[in-house]
Image (cartoon, rainbow, N blue to C red; front, side):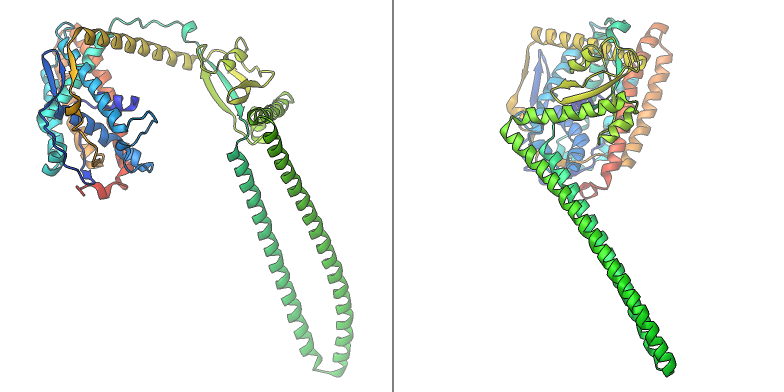
Length: 509
């Protein structure tokens, strides 16, 4: 659900365009002004939550449906015993509760929306309403006020979280973030799928051999036809003169005799070669079948996991021998029917066996023995004991983790101190009995223009503030706008890809 949380928090001050509805709504009773969430003396109507949910639904439903899921929000997508729709409502309850808690703390953190930001929110909400016809808005139960309130809460939450985590320690040492890079090939235990793939390969080989035999037979047929044609021509020539006929007959007899002998030799050789090929093929197939039967019997007699793991170890040892003999890593992996991969990790990597096996090894060092893990056997070479780029990226991750931990801790503290409630009966009136599609490319472009104008106004306002206020606000605004632009671009690309699949959903069915 992390992706849904990200989508709900980003895209502020952009035009949120939902195309149209598909499917048949059950028209469940829905009072958009009913209170869904209460935090101290402030409330959020279910219409605001409904818009937040529909915004996410429109972003993700086309993606899920393109994967063959016809009704994703009424399915248990993660095997947790709840539908995607239930997960969405639970997430939005948490998100909006935290947003209201943050709003109530804004004065304490000296945070406030600027006039330009407020105007941008109003413009985005207006763009959304104008981009959807009355029937769609009625189906959604959404008003411009609901859209504005959701965008307002979301923007406030972003600005507040910047201040809530402003004092987080951003210093991370190389030692704490150190990452090493390895090249590896993993040999996993042989599975039923692999055996099935092997069978398919053998079948394809047999089909190819049959095709070659068919072509050979066709060529022989053409040769015989050519011989017959030549014989007929010779017969016509015989009628010209008796002498020529006799000579031709004698010549033909000699030629026929030689040809017959050669044909017999050729046929004999072909038959011998064919028999040899057949015997070789039969022997190979018998050996393959015998090996397969032996493996099957072995797996039946002994624990399958142990036998499969042993086969993986033998393969890993074979590749390792190739490497020790001087073969390149990629070539050795290819010879084994595998691919060479690479990854970076630190001391906290979940596959502890790889951490231990490569600890202290210099660049270019080949680990001397296959590394056994739950997944199989790894053949490993240390590319870089200390990878600078990966280490710097890890530092950013560590700082972000610190930020999120502090933000989460504050929300937990504030919620414990506040009077918070959610009306489950009201929230249950949000149903997923129709589908939403993503915006068209033309709508997205129009929205992007509106966003650019709003951002320009905000930047102009920032220039009139004091130097310290400008620096603080510019930093927060740049990060939020960059994220918004990235989200808008992703939505545009996804929308363009899904457009051809969703043309039939552009009106209410």
